[in-house]
Image (cartoon, rainbow, N blue to C red; front, side, top):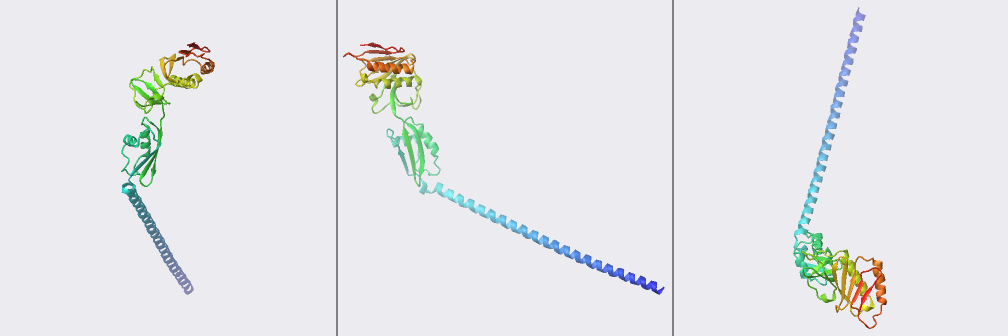
Length: 289
């Protein structure tokens, strides 16, 4: 019996000892877990602080950059150092700088960065005499404009006499040497304005014919200087002294007209002046002395 009690007592002690060890082990594990959690929380908090600090620094730098850009923009757009004090125009021979400056509007005194160069170029090309225009900045205070003027080519009688270029664009009603230009009459057109294109293919062909005829030796001293369109099927050309009339039909083939010009150049006048030439027929020339 004593042996049984002793054995039972030993088992109880062993069990209590085992429970104590398990309790200590659990406490140690709980402490380790709490310590690990604290380290994790501490690391996470540091990461958040670092991220916030980095983000705040970037925001401050971005604001500083925008502020510098704003100050730079304010400086270049408001500083009198960049106000235009000269407009240099190149290529205009018949139109004065004053007339072009009046046409395009005020440029001098404006900020060189705020001027719209495309609008300036576009406005200049709307002038009847300007064929093309290109504007560029010449820092710090000048605008350089290159122009290409239209070339007077002929006079055309509409509701009044106009000067036009070789594209048929009306340039104006006055010109320095209008008597040196060929004259076109017989056009019925109203409500015309400067800068408008008033010619068609028929008139262009007629001017080409006039040019070809003026290459002939018989018109060397007495050039053809006027073209009258009497109808769509007949043009009448006149020489400078108005004593010779050439009748042509625009409908004849270009090749036929070339042959007629070659034949006409070979004709001898026998000391007589021609008063009438009719080239309206294909492969036929009618002459009157």
